[in-house]
Length: 355
View 1: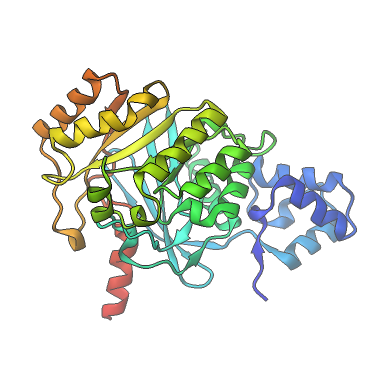
View 2: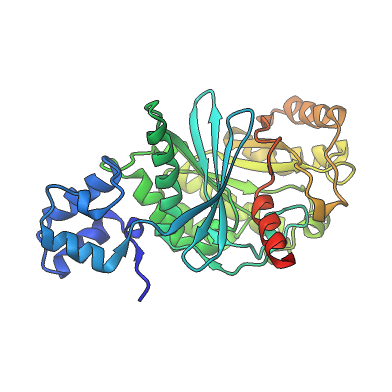
């Protein structure tokens, strides 16, 4: 029987499980401390935990469900990890260095069914959801990688923007958020965590209701239905009007700013006309909106798209700013490695199939 990852349990779930298996309640906090504060690599290293409890954990759980297959490091310090899961599937995780700290981008699914026509993640269809433990373990692996470097560095920010649609794996994503945010664990602040969705409107309502205080980002990429449907098939199920109603509910419920991600594609969605439409779409949300303009990372399989030129980017930005829309152009990282999300994984799977 395949063991599940110990990192998939919230502190409450761990407490209940240990009590159900004859252990005292306080054992959960001891185990939690060894996992997230001391970051041990084996259950046997938990020195103040009794042997019976350690044996119980070893019989039922695994601490290593990821195996590093490839590590790429960019000249700017960005590090991309390709991990092999227990079932042989591949996922990506990225460590990024910013002036404000260290950020990790995690994957939530093996493959993606959203089908954005510009995205490397969707080149390979969804195989399965990741468990909450497999998502948490991406953070733990990168943090141990930092620990081993001996510089005392700590992951301070997390973005859930890797392969897959987080809200299509909602429960596991939420458990992941609760685990990494817990004050007696990794204690990554809620306001330092961002979850990105392609626009699953019904899940935005649900996310608003649980009020985790983490940041929400919407992959918008077009300001009208005709264009958005052309480049993002999810818009057929959740057109912009339905999406914006969900966003309005989120804003009213949480009073937290929403980031709108907008990848600029040359001669597709980067005209002054689209900029004006975006202003109109967001004008009543200006006080709680931020538009993140993203330079496109070309993908071989999506050669119909090119990166917008600097003049178009500047003109688009200027129109938004002129009309009071908070916005910025994302700083590029990892451009000298397989920068686009899912690109490294896709290349490795193709290579394996060719052998």
